[in-house]
Length: 158
Image 1 (cartoon, rainbow, N blue to C red):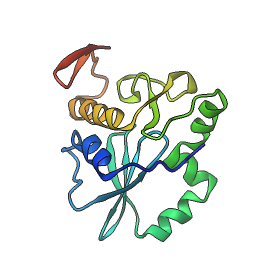
Image 2 (image 1 turned 60 degrees about the vertical axis):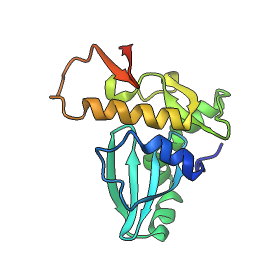
Image 3 (image 1 turned 180 degrees about the vertical axis):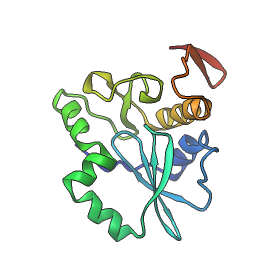
Image 4 (image 1 turned 45 degrees about the vertical axis):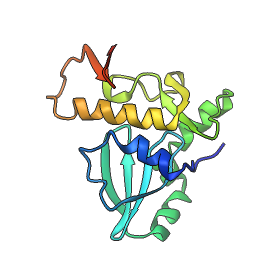
């Protein structure tokens, strides 16, 4: 099981194009987690794009701090969802070269963070769709009932 997922600059660019509501300027993708969260390098720090929360955080001052954090069980569970990835991997689900684990129903719209809600999905498609979903729901009041959402011009029911 690979906890660090590598993708091309073009794949990162295409996947991140639906995240304009976050300040990604001046940040270069380094790698992704097994669930498609993106680690980005900037002159001032290493940033973490959390696709479950739809947030971008300045977490580490340097690459050395990042790697130190990811060598710990706590860091692997927090930033790579290693425990969940191991549970899914043990069930025989393993992403290919251009894939990551994804949630069948995104947690932001009510999906559970649970192995039963995980599938293998294309990295670019997953990252792009999650950006679109987070962009649509980010300013809604708490507990807003979502009856549907639009992805790339097509309506999907929830």
